[in-house]
Length: 308
Image 1 (cartoon, rainbow, N blue to C red):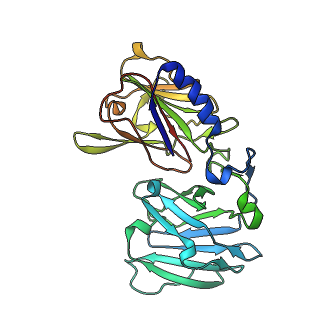
Image 2 (cartoon, rainbow, N blue to C red):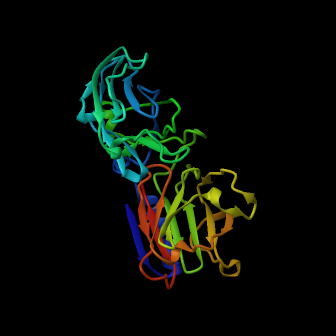
């Protein structure tokens, strides 16, 4: 979801507080108190050609509404197209068109209920396009956890799929690195000189390892991450953004003015100035790609809510 409006600075500050607090994903709209998910009941085992989804619980596992997504939704696969549920220890398995014969199931899977060859790259959700690229198991479009896609190595990603009434309750998504709760979205504000990215969700930490800006330079797409810039404290150190914290990208330090009600924990020069034209933002949790900016440079502060 994306909200983008041209407005005065005071309106930006007011709307960020209201919209940042109110925005939730569909799975979170039922209550304002998400809870941590229980111990995993599902396991993905994968490499550069194949992936298996295994029921690791002692009870049948419903796969209704279960899907997998990578690259902001450009790559996705719906598990329910193969089967609606798995018995304990059972699995489903898919592989790429590079596999020319039926291959064996992982030792963790006692019985393989279904297998399938996927002919299109748009379904290869577990295979990375770049190092440390994430992908997401989802339930009804809302992230359950974040897994690391394979660049050739064998990967394992355990997670919990809510069952029955639990699937109707909100849940907390934890950062797999820090184990801390992640916000469903983030706030982006910019003008002609600067761009602010902030986390305004209480009691959460916004990881920055997969935070990205995508924009054109000389007709070619550029993928920016915090590690691409040199910050006022030195090289990027992987810090997350706690509630009320933000980072600032700019071209002229003398023109930096507050665009979000947050405390900057890092500032960096970005001479590409993507905020002068149309650019995309991808956040670390739901990783839905949102377009900000426009055909003309901004004439004042602009707010862009990037939500999960």
